[in-house]
Length: 488
Image 1 (cartoon, rainbow, N blue to C red):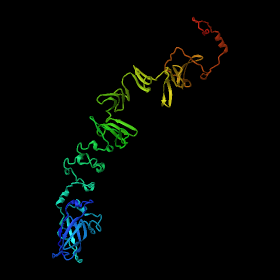
Image 2 (image 1 turned 60 degrees about the vertical axis):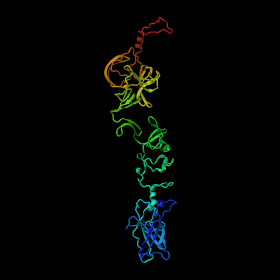
Image 3 (image 1 turned 30 degrees about the vertical axis):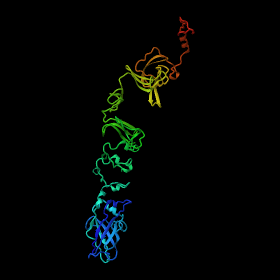
Image 4 (image 1 turned 90 degrees about the horizontal axis):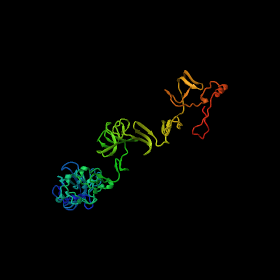
């Protein structure tokens, strides 16, 4: 039996009727009138219950339904009324409930999908004859808006939390969708836009108009604020670059490498860097220098310079040696003492000075280190010099000796001057001179330990020598209180 339904769409009205809110059902009201192929109304003598299938297609003919459901409708004198979306699913097709495929979808889900902008409704009514296959009523009917449904294009109001991220397509809200100056601060409730309402990395600088974000709109505890003065910007607290926990006014991340570039945007530059156990202050090339001083960059008084070649100048900008000082007289280096007398080095006219702070202090020469020092010479503050002697008892006090192989031409012993010509290496010397030694007197201290006895003297001859010595008594004109002195 061929069915020719008359379709009455009474509630295709507002799109809001399909919105999933607690107050608006997600159904579509549908009324139809059904006759057989002879024009006889179904259920003309008594109401009958028939199964009716409702399917939505994206094409007017053919294709596969994108949504389907089945309901049992009561037909009386050819007329029936249902709520599409309130039925059961059809196996193998998307629908509102079992046995439809999962996930289930409501009628609102399908109508609000951007992939379903044009939809056609296909209807199949059971003719009550189990031996025949029921055909879909042709043609399918396109779903269109009712008069006031056009108003659904414009939202007059939005319920709290009604608009979710899934409702807004990517890049769907562009600048051309918002009238210029339409969203002003009076349109946005105080504190309405919080950080939780803005997706991470979604608001870029290009999205903000100049001057749009003012300091009172920024959470200082979240991003920190800089204050603006007539000459620059400033802020209280610490600033971290590469670290979120700065412990100092300006703090960099604990990573090696370049830290600050004062001149140069890439590659070699003037700046500061860090390498293991090393703070680096550098220029871009070895022909450039690093200077220390005071004043300003354009009004600079230099006190020290480190050349790119490694030479250091203190008081001079043109050092010619690893460490150079200005050509001025006076103290140069203090090793101990912060003022006045000190241990150090100085310069006076044609004189290099190495000095200590008082006459009771000494200068020592040697090798090793300060804490493990091997002394070989000392200059006392009194002027005495000790060689291998730290407590000299004379202007020059030499301790120790060496054996040297040399040609002995003459010597003096207890027997008088002797002349010889022989090479010797059995004699110990404390002082060796290539030329003469001149002095007004010479004291020789005899010591049997360093002498070789040649023979014993004669007592008789020694007595005769003593008897020949004349002794003279005398007094000083100014009489001393001491006993008379006798010259031998």
